[in-house]
Amino acid sequence: MEKLLFTVPEAAKILGIGKNKMYDLIHSKNIRVLKLAGLKITKYELENFVQKNINKDFSDMNNVKAVEEEGETL
Image (cartoon, rainbow, N blue to C red; front, side):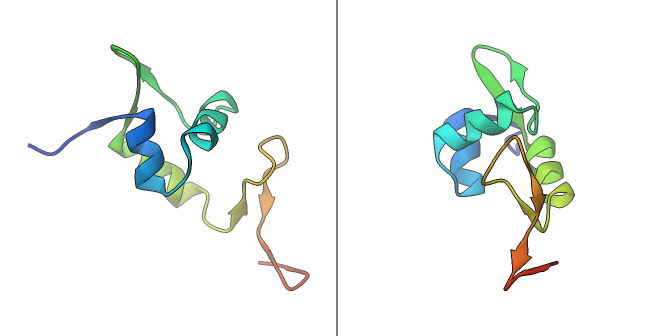
């Protein structure tokens, strides 16, 4: 059976980011969680986050903006 729920560290590893950045995404409400014996993130939520946020810059969680390349907005 395919895994549907991931812990915060597992989800961070899947996205290739650190655990603290994952918590930042959760606290800024960019990633929704389920509390079930600790915080869990669904496979759907991870896939949806990636699809919805292509070409976005999350360097500043309070000011998410389009990715810029060589001074131009993509």
